[in-house]
Length: 283
Length: 215
Image (cartoon, rainbow over all chains, first blue to last red; front, side, top):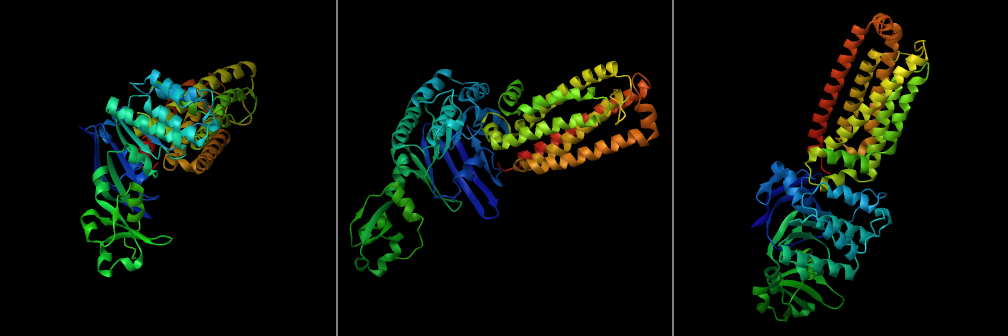
């Protein structure tokens, strides 16, 4: 079942353009949404929920259009964009009490469990929380109403490694046990290596790649070489050439790897992203 | 709707919005431009929207299972509740004033039936000018308020001047109740209709602006 379908999403700002973004997310899957700062991740996520008014495009959640079923759709999804910045001087229990009144499926037990697990004190105010704790409280609110889809904009930024690990474990258990789907934008690609099934990579407002994470990783190999090792004729096969301390590194498509005179190695998401951002630069 | 109202008063409405209701007692001042009392409701609304900006009130509401237009409706409803409360309190203090002080108001319009009709128009104008500008750019709440102040004080100036210079207002409307009650009731009715019309128009235009706004 498709929980989110985006077709031809466009948004133009004076200095930025989101162009023809299309992807879909199936039930029970985690999609990592990656791209460098300013690539259009937040604009895309905000457009999905009409926080930003798209110029064009079709968006469906659970087979329904947001314009017609906004309330029902929002009952079924949770959105977290960074930490809780709202009402910095109100106690968490006051914010929680009001928030819960809007959700049909609010789960007090789950809320209490996440508050305990994240060591959140409900008598504190957001102003008294660290950046990481603010993110945890935002996640607590998003996870406490049995959302079927979580849209998370950089949820792990500002969290320590242990908390990030704990969070990805929670995401995985939500996916496995409840069939929740997660669209997860982040810079910290190692989190995605751990929990993502699919990947969407956006660059300068355009989706460059969408598909299964494993397939995306298998598409590329990393090659590291000294300049004299690489014949000029093969340089067009290299993508995103980067000069390191002693040698160059670049991506090469897996089917072209055999043609190179030097060995290639597996790549992780971060390496692919760093090199693809340098696509077009000559060795 | 009840949930929205609860949220507004628990998290959003600035304390001055409630405290300024007490200024309805200014109707006990023997000689005073009583329209100014209603301006404080607008000031309370400004503080609510100003702190709302700092508290990311709109960002919070957009996360809730609400339509975008509900964000606007919530603020209108809480404002109408405060305006209604102020109207009731000012009526009580006007009755008290007229019982305690036999002379009319030498500084402006008497606190009588017609005055409340004209004050309702003032509130309607304040709602229209403030909200339609505010929901175009919620981050520019100050400019919406300055424009509202200008409109409000021009209206107060005209209304108070009329109480001295326009014979019908001076001789028929600006006299203690129950004299000329039918004419005053007509003004009250027209004021209520004007308030309703201006506020409905303000809501419609605000919703239209806010729905196309990038938050």
